[in-house]
Image 1 (tube, rainbow, N blue to C red):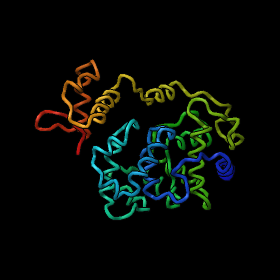
Image 2: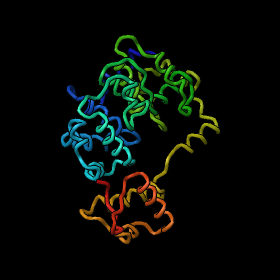
Image 3: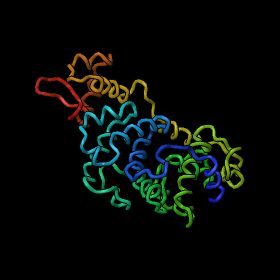
Image 4: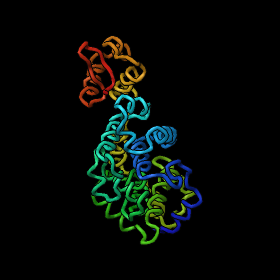
Length: 286
C-alpha cells in the first residue's frame, strides 16, 4: 500500500472533528473514541463538546452522579458505555490517562481498539489501530475482497506491517478516514481513492462478494426498530425525562408487547442502568 499517498489524501480531506483540535487532552481523545463506537461522528461531536465543557477531566466526571451521566449521554445509544466511562474516570482517580496500551486496557470499559487509538492518536505511539473502516480498506486494497472478514487477531499484525516508521500515527488516522469517507461499505467512491491504481480489489476486476460472504455481512448488520435495544431506549427515555421516580405504569405505556418490555426492563436493571426504590418506583442509578 502506498502509505504516502494515503497520508497526502488525508492532508487534503481530513474532517475538522473537534477532538482533533490541537491541545485536546488524552481524556478528550479517550472520550471521543468511546462515544464514536457504532455511532456516526456527526451525532457524537455535539455530545462530546458538551461533555468536555461539563466534565473536562476524568476527575470531573468521577464526581458526577450516574444519573447525570446517563442523562447527558442522551440518544447516543448503548448507554452502558456512559457508565463504563464513569467507572473508567473513577479508576483513573487523581491520576492521568495512561499512554501505554496495556495500562489503558486495564481501565474499565477500554478494549483493544480504544486502548490503541488513544495510545496512537494522542500519545503518538506507532501501534496498529483496527476498526471496521480499517478492516474494510485492508480487505480491498491488500486482499482483493469487497467485504471485510470477521475480526481476527491476525489483523493487528497485518495492519502493523503497513505502518511506516515515520508518521505512523498520521497514517493510521488517514487509513481510518479513507474507510469512513471513500472506501465505504456499500458504495465506495473508487474514483476519489488515492490508492485505486494499486488496490487489489480493483486489479482483480472488482469481483462481487461470494454468497457466503454476503450472507455473513448481512447477518452482522444490526437492525434497531422493534428490537429490545429500542425498547430499552424508550424505557430509559422515561427515566431521563422525569425528575422523580416513575411507576411501573409509566414504563408500561411506552411499549405494547408486555413480554418484550419486561425483558428489556429486566436487562436495564441487571446492567445497572435502572434502579428500583423501596416504594417500587423506578429511577436512574444514583
